[in-house]
Length: 301
Length: 108
Image (cartoon, rainbow over all chains, first blue to last red; front, side):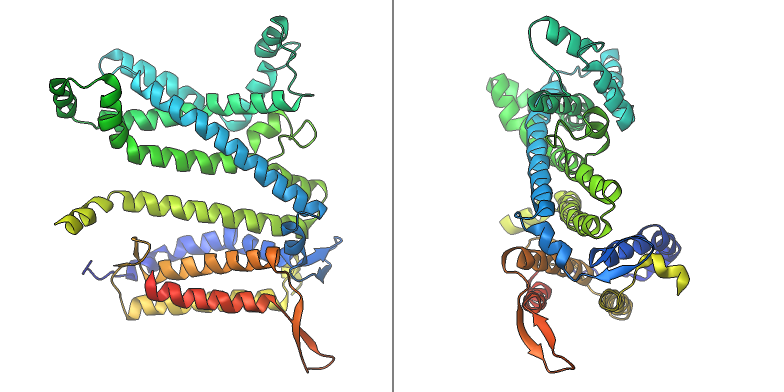
């Protein structure tokens, strides 16, 4: 780490910075301004200090209750989809062919859900799950399940989770597959000589080698599911009641439904901080993942 | 000032952003005038001054939010200006944040 860093190249980024200033920095500043004021429209604002933040972080107020409940729902949603998508993605990657034309076929089929726009995914599942005309909803009801995602909380959660698993497991699988492909054949040959079982090969060779891509997959899926808006909005609209109202849906309800700009601004700033922290962790882990090994070796030697 | 009325500027937020902008300006000047090497601190990740500033700022935001959530913003003193300007306990969070920033710049 003796190398000095020359930061002069950053001046070349200045034009981009000016564009970003207009498209992102000024609106963000406005959000900060809104978050400390109250307005009744007509560009008239009244100073409110940190009042909105106080309300937002206090579970006894309406705003705080809604915010904390939606954060809780969002974390539960992220935990469930991670618990399903990561193991499922690994299994899919392990069972994919390694050679021949089947590889290309598998990759294309796996990539298909990733290529569909979010609102189209939502519409597909919205129709697919309908008890009257949707294949899934109709079949489930005909074989005896009383399934209706419009009126039942659990059914709504089931639909949203299955939709997310359908949409994003391929991403985890593709990342894992890339990790698996990078394992040299020598490792498998050594395992074969040792007479290692399938499970031992997975535990000692494949899982450690997939470590990094799995980390990337987990962080990517966490961030995406924590910011999810379009799919549940199209399928359930946050209902029934508030049962699938995630943070971003709550935010839009407050900002555009009730037009409470101050509350919405405070909420989006806190939301933004959470996402920013996760992004930073993501970025730091990703950029340092490769650099970790040499420093460890130095430590050993 | 009509054309920026939609941005709803207030004096405190203007001071905040001016301070932030001048901090970034000073950091930019420092980076150009005194180039530095990355170093690995207690977090075991290589950080530059800019990284440490970023961590400090995010941590300051988190400290303020936690303070609002768990301690509150009751007034702790009042300055004898005009009718008396009340100082909320949130300034203590600001002091803690500065302390944390100093610690981060020295150890991370």
